Each structure stands twice: as structure tokens, then as C-alpha cells.
Image (cartoon, rainbow, N blue to C red; front, side, top):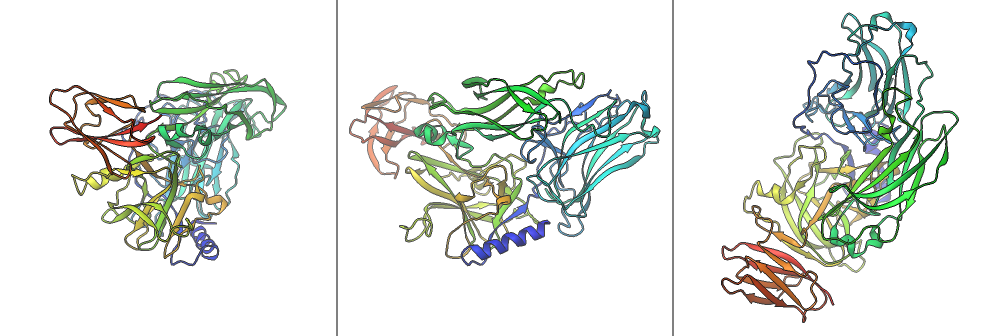
Length: 633
């Protein structure tokens, strides 16, 4: 099914099974022109590499390893686009150049077809070898994965550089037939014209040149002597993918929201998959899993090491896991980057492909942030999604475990077919939606903001609604929105018929919390099984009990303690001249005037009911600081 057929399928599916509407939520390829700063380059290097040549893309991400490959290269090394990789990490081929711009964007749908990403090895010394040395190149390839499906006219192919400095075609695969598994390719280097001191090989993608179209993935590239045509396997164990990480529903949460109900928000287990690449017999392995703080590299919880077990030589995507203990991390007020880490304990080392240390792919991890925002996505935008109709709306449901203060929204827009930077969209925050909440008479819009359309410059970059609005209104400040515990929705409304698309992550699945409205009724998006994912749209909350509204000074010059407080709270330092305590609806409950040269002040709170409040301090120069104050008993 090519991309056009896919869009027609989604349209028909939603038309038949959703409520009647003039337009539908649809997926699009990502054509955003990302920029990569400080790209490495080694195009002028002449030193030839020695065999073996090996790269499984497991121990780095971003630009290809410049010790092995010519860079810059449009190929992107990542752990999010490949499906069931041979080892963690793949090299992804699409229609974006190394600098992030499409190879051709002027003729998007018809003429922009040709050579796209190319992965070229550095020169390799083969002058001391000959055909009897049985030199072979092998790798694994996958069509589509979590990217856009190549058409039947698209291809992935391999070329060798001969001794006349001419590139020769030696292998190719046409698109149009994606499979769930990676397939092996083995190519003999058996012609005398390839045995010279500057031999190179390159893997090339051919397809649409206007964005993340016609996606291929390559894994486990291996060139060496004394091999055979059937030599696709290596005697080793490799980690593949994390299946379940620390958080159950979200990929990131505000610290306070997590600790308000850790039992509900924590996964019941950590799970992952490993592959035995030997193909015969069996191996004895074990593994351990730990939770770490990636910011400090400290262990938060060691989930233990398993007893050794037998893993058959043909076992692929073998599931492993450890049960998550109750309260796996201790409460803290400092932000955490909780890293779920798998360490496979194998017999791998440097003896299989000397001197390559195959233990490089025995460790796998993923990170969940506990800081100041909620997210369903993992930060990667494999697609875009939107409603192609003026006033079409998309909403994402989030749930707060405790009252909180919304201070911004971050989002990742993707480009599709044309640049909409001269246009805008409406960012909307709802308390509830009609036809989703049976008790709601009409949509409860808490806030609506006109936001200029801007595109991120980095693949994993999200833009701030406040910062984007400041580009056209320098004095703009995102309002402080007090939200009670429970459901709320954030999303967008189109202002024209041009399709505004938000980044869509295919590695996670929150479609049950995505709703669209192209008329007068909200519908949950019933995405096909192969199109599930999450939108890159995140609510941001006040950070570490503090939100300073002046960009040049993000921290109050005074300290608030204890917090939570029971009967009295103290302010100490360079104090404001006036202090107000309000509830989350903005009602002023108490006002205090601070005398001159006072450096410490006690404020009674024993008459306030248990809950969350806002303490607003106004400095002599008019600058205002807002802090969250929790009252406990």
C-alpha cells in the first residue's frame, strides 16, 4: 500500500466508522527541514581501514560514526524508526539531507524522485587480499519499519568502488513489500577489480526526495574475510528493544504528579527483547535490570540479576523482564531522568570478530523524565497528523493526580507539501469536551491562543507556545492556568483549510486519548493497528514549586519553606513588598505587606484547608514571582 492508498484507507475507515464529518484526522509524511549543527566531516581523509569492518549502530545515535563512514551523510542513526531490529539501533534512509532539508522540495508529489540518502564507507584496505580469501559484505535491511512505506518504484541498493574509481551496482531491493522482520543480505567481494587499497562500498536509497518518504533501515553491517554465502549470522547475543519502561501511561511526568500517585503511574514491570544471532545450538545467558538517574548516573533501584538460562540459537525478539517493586524510587523534590536499563550478561567479547568487542550491544536503556511536563510521545516524529479543514480541532486528554499550574505548551509541527509559516493556528485548552463527557452541555474552553506556525530545526525539538508567540508579540507571557485534579485537554484548531500537522510518534500508543472534531461532534480517533501512535503536544507546569514570569530571572530571590506547610510558612531572603495567597481559581485568600529591610517573615496558614495554593510575591520593581504552596495536616 503506497502513501496515497494509505491516506485513502484512513479516510474511508474514519468515514465509515466515525460520526459524519466534513474532514478527518489523517497521517502525513514528515517533510520538515531539520538542521544539524556542527556536522562532522571526513570527506578528505585518505587513510584506509583494515578488516574487519563492523557497525551495528547500537552504541551511538545521530550522524554515522565518522571513524567508519564518510560524513556528513543524510542517513540518521536512531533507536526509534526500526521495528524489531537485529541489535538496538538502525541506520535510517529517507528523503532528508544531512542538514535536515529535503533533497528537493519544489516538486513534492510528482517530479521529486531520485537518489536520496547514501551511507558510504571510508576507504578499506583490500589490496592484500584476492578472491580466494572469501571476502563478503553482509547486513540486515527493513522496508518501512515505523516510517513511510516505499513504493514499488523505490529501492535500496549497494555499490562497490572498483580500481578504476568507478561505482558498480552489486545488489538491490525494490520497495512495495514491507515485512515485520529484518532480512539478511550477503554480497561476495569476488572480482579482482575490487581488491585494491581504497575499496569502498555504499548503500543508497532511491525514492521521493521531498521529506521522510520511502524509508529503509539497515542494521548490523559486517565486512570480513574467510566468510561464506550463507554466513549471515554471528555467534553472539544482542539486545533489541525496550518494550515497557518505568512509567506506565506517559513517557514523562511532572515530579509532583508522579509522587501524588506512584502506584498508578509506575509500570508493573520492565520488559525488553533480546536476539540470539548464532542460528544454531544454544547459549547460556542472564541479565540484570536497574533504574538509574541519568542526570547523576546514580542507581535508584537495582531490580536484580536473573539466574542463567538457556537461549536457543534461533530465538529472536525473546521477551525478558523484571517485576517492578512497590515504590521503586524514593520521593524527592529534585527532577529525575529515570533510566530503565537492561544489561545482558553473555559470553560475548572480542573472540568472535577480533578485535570487535560485541559486548557493545549487550546494554539497552530508555529514559522517562520526571520534571515539569506531561508527554505520551518519545520525542521522535516519524509522521505528522492533522485535520484538513478550517476550524477542524484535535484534542489530547491528560489526567492530573493533583491540582497543578499550567504555564506553557510545547509542540512539534511538521511540514507537509508546503510551508505554512505565514499562517497561524489556535492553541486551545479545554476542561471537558461535549460527546466525551456526558455531563457537559458544551465544550469548556479554558484558554485559546493564536500561535504563529513555526517549524522546529532539530528532529527532537519541541517549541514553546510562549516563545513562538513572543516572536510577534515580544511582551507576551503565557497565563498561569490553575488546573484541578482530573481530566483536561490540550490541542489545536485550524484557521484555514491548509493542513496543519503535528509530529506523530509511532513508537508509543495513546490513540484512545486523541479526539478530533471537524463539525459539531468529538470523536475518538480509531486508528488502524499499524497507525497507532502519540502526538508531540505537551502541557508544561510550574517547575520545582516555582515559576518566575520574567525570562531573565527564573528564580525568586527568596526562599519559601517548609513546603508543604502545616501551620506556618516562612519566607527568607530578599523579600517582596507584597504577598498574596490565592486558590487555584485565582481568588485572593490573604494579603500581607512586608516591611522594609525585613529578611525573614512568617505567614500563618493554619486556617487554610489542606490543598494546593499559589503564593504571589511582588518585588519593589514590579516583578512578580509565583510559587506553589502545599498545605498539609
